[in-house]
Length: 121
Image (cartoon, rainbow, N blue to C red; front, side, top):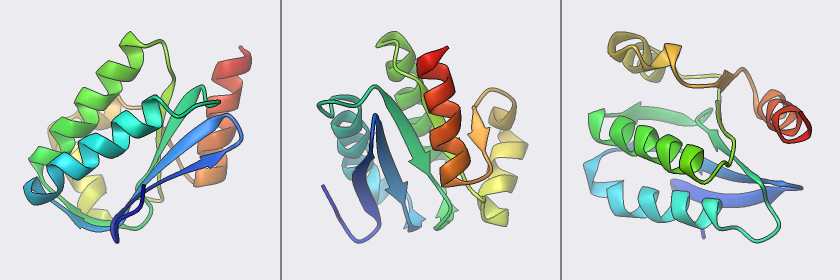
């Protein structure tokens, strides 16, 4: 699945959802579809949400991320986010307090490494 600002790819055992540019309520159904696609990606066992190229997100996206995290937990599938985060995204996560409950890696490579540790642990 690939749209200009939403892409689902695979890195070995990890499905990677990449969000780019501005994501808001108008992109909600496409983001939800990307998370569902990642969660059911054949041959993968974890999901990495790559936010390195995301420059704007609103509370609607934040809600979708938290919902996806809960759905992954319920499916016993590790879910990690990675940056580096744009300052606006970092601020959204800090202001809402979700930065303390989300597993956040510094880079895509760190995120894949963290997920592999969780899968092998």
